[in-house]
Amino acid sequence: MRIRLIYLVFLFTLTSIQAQPKITKLTGGHNAWPPYIEENGKGLINDIVSAAFRAQGIEFEIKTAPFSRIVMMVEDRQIDLVVALWTTEERRKSFLFSAPYFYNELVLVSKKTNSIDYQGLESLRYRSVATVRGYGYHVLLDSIDELDIIDVLNLHTCLELVNKGRAEVAIADYLAFEYERSKKLEYNQLQAYHPALIYWPLHIGVSMLHPNADQIIKRFNLGLAQIQGSGEYNKILSTYIEDNRFKVALSTVP
Image (cartoon, rainbow, N blue to C red; front, side, top):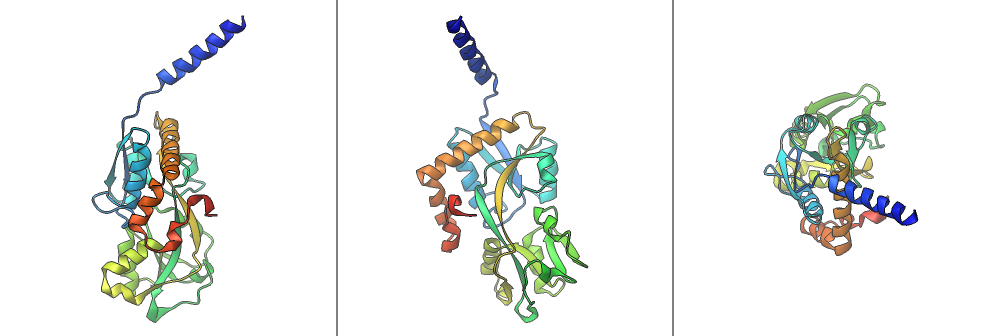
């Protein structure tokens, strides 16, 4: 009886494994967000996510489009996942999230000639702020009094509005801001404020309606652990990031 029970358990396990569809290729999407994601899809995020899936024998590619459109493409199954996503209570109702693979340092940016008395999020009261439409940090703004939000398609446009005086401040990932500033001389008159508003973990997100959602998340998490353990993860970071603050291992980030 015991031998038969063990055989049945083994048979059930084997059948369950065989029943899972084999994933060989996945497509993710996001808006261009250099240096994380260039217009052609290349960049830091592509390298990390591709390496994690490659460690699991899965080919991966990124499509770029406005962020709000990418979310709709995931919901409509035109692509498999959002390649860089912050968690919010609302998103957790419809998305499965991976383990974090990076932490974004969100800061306020203003012109040096229009400095603000920086006191964290409270500094936004009664101000105009440029934000990227659909980004998760909007949940941080719900409790701010008399806030004038100007939604645009990307960070570059946010910085343009601040630079031209059409918005008082912008919310930006610090690394992305520094990248934009290095590419345009005019942006040297912009400044970021510290400490950061928040350090936000970055995940891949898969719609709960995707038939392979659980497996995609599990395979990514396994691949991520593999490249972190092998040293490939830190090697990828060092290719893009010179500032030592961004080389901290994820296990030590709060």
